[in-house]
Length: 377
Image (cartoon, rainbow, N blue to C red; front, side, top):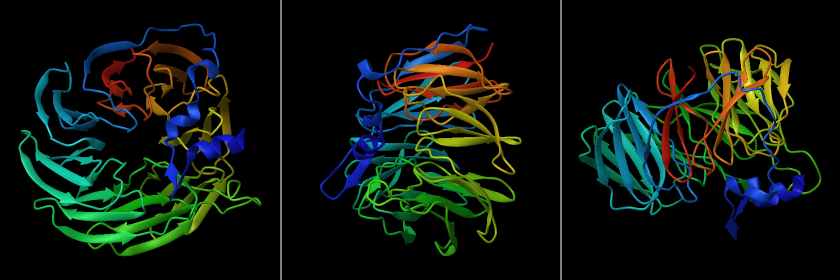
């Protein structure tokens, strides 16, 4: 089974398979676990922004505005609290990734290699062309738009003009998992995980490498067994940056020098989130784990969602929240991991973790293209 999953995930020169393939057909998905519904999650508003098809789109929140996009090329702006649609534009491109928003700019990427930037009124600002697949959300910070390409390159573009400032190149191994993970920007540095289990820190202004560290090393005798790729976003705080690898481990490094602080054996392709003193991780079996953020020690494990293709976790108040391949949103108690509530959406996969809207609300975007604002009552 593990090898079969790997085969479905692999991206090579002869072809590639999207992450959602590992979820299988709906007939193979385990039944929903029985739970005592402690409360009814609230859908405060929803809208149809268009199908994602085989791409992964993530809504962006910037101040009081929400931006969302679809594969068909539409880009939307909503008012955050009530979901009132402010504008909709046609980009004229088939989109492959987005949305990035910040510092007065909204950025999406197209399947033909165009990075498309708009101002907050929806007016085109600039575009930049790259050769290669654009699969991940752009990041905007410190006057720079950071864009990641599927072949291992990261571009730094001038926020005002779209002019290339720098490019970082990381060599991918011949066999790797098709990843939609982008980058994280913090304190003037760009952090990105790569195939082969590497994590890098790059200066956002110059593209100079600050350090490169190893999250996980390849093990096993076959090429499939030796895959150890970082396929999700790193987690960064003031002192450490942490990343997790598929068929590898979770490792935390000193933020200044990249020296290993601690590590623990956990495998994940979906990713994790940190909240106070806890990491919450969706492992590659579909378990949700709570780990101590200073040592990796296990606190609890929730296994009732195995095989349901869950997203990385999100933390809302006293609950850990994940979406799944059938469009359900599941709520677990943060203290012990017990499943206490769930709510259905449109029946299509949720492929990216919920996005924080404010202290009370979060967003979920489905593969069919429905955007939901949710809350815990």
